[in-house]
Length: 586
Image (tube, rainbow, N blue to C red; front, side, top):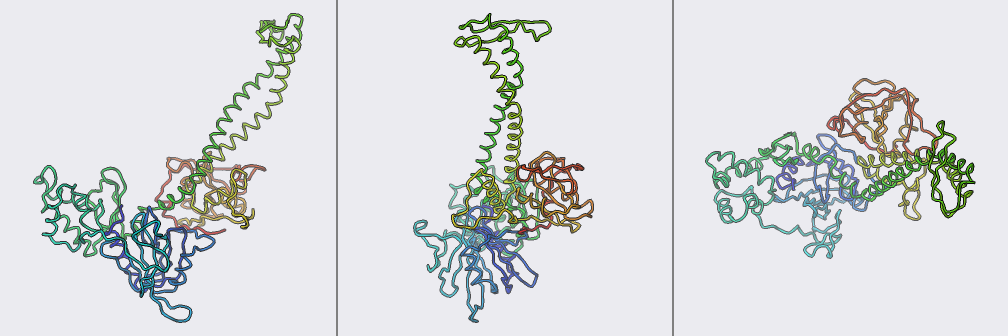
């Protein structure tokens, strides 16, 4: 995993600036994440503590998080013991991926209490645990660990805190040359990378590979065919650890030899492409993780929805094939009428038991003969009536088939639109999409029995961006948001944007006056939050809201418009992410 003991040390060094800072607010936007709003000498900051099983981390963040309507119990506990509290110190445990926060707070009766917040960034064993600092008793943890889960330690309220199991590895910052060489030569059966990882605490395979890469480069032509000698490896190891010991961090990201994106708190010589450096480890992690954690959580939550929508889309595609065949037959209805009239005019030539007959077609200028299939079990008159029945059936069905084809195309477009929306949806957006499908009758409502149902006029989540000119730009991430932005929030002189003939978000420039920069940034948002986000020269239509309208009875989020101009933009993810944005309730 990329987040190792060295990255944790860099985080601890960056968080040292919070000593004496005050925790003003605590939020828990998801089951694994805590947000501290902090007031410090350097200004207000937002600190993310994540015990995600996939992407655990601690970092300052500029991202906006939508909080649940009701705060979880662990969040309420942190508010009770940490809100208003002063951060006395933050320390790393050795070179482990564990940080301790000491927080001093004065309670409602004036008594001062000291709490310790333990943040364990250990993959699927990650946790955030609040302790009474004096007794080391657990007040609660964001993830409970019961005896059924672990026989080694329990994380439950009232239990004495026990550290994660010791790995009995050496601290790489305290290792001398003699010890290093002795350990290296004592485990020659293992691979060089594994020898380092298994011997020293806090070293990830990435850092071990970096040590070997530096040693190989330093050894040059004198290096043996298999690996550099132990002296070259020690020199590379000691050089890297000296930088870590002295706090000389240089966060970076880039692609390794296998084309995989990696990040580090120290410079990496093994980065081959797309090297990028950062002023702080938080900025580096913000770039590396981006919205990976949110996307991963959303992916788990929307799996059933995606499968349902894909199945519904597949059914409609098959239905369209059948309707096209029916349409072909229905368009031949006139042939059935002609055959019926020819049979009636020639009843004297028909006999029961005949399978077919050839008759002159008096509707044809050349009177060419036409072969007509007969039912041998029916009489002459019944055979003629059978063709007239087919004629009436298909003639009447033409209008119905046309209407069904139109509706089926709308259904496919609706499913495509929802699938696209799920690609960029947050957890709150997913809930709104699910509620929309329940309201439309596609799925059952998940509102618990007895709970209040959302009113139709309830206002949705809004995603607000600010252009480089300071103009507000709203982006709808689902149909509920699209309809609110376009039909209720917008003024007639506001500008509306949408990708041309491509499923995507409704984008609204909330101003009658703006410059080219704002228009380009709004078009970028429309292209980025669409099905064509990975394409180039994406067509984006722009028009004033007065020219946008919703047809009666149409699907949610569907509109028609005119007086549009079409811009062509290539989505730029860095530009979109650089725009200040916030998530709020309408």
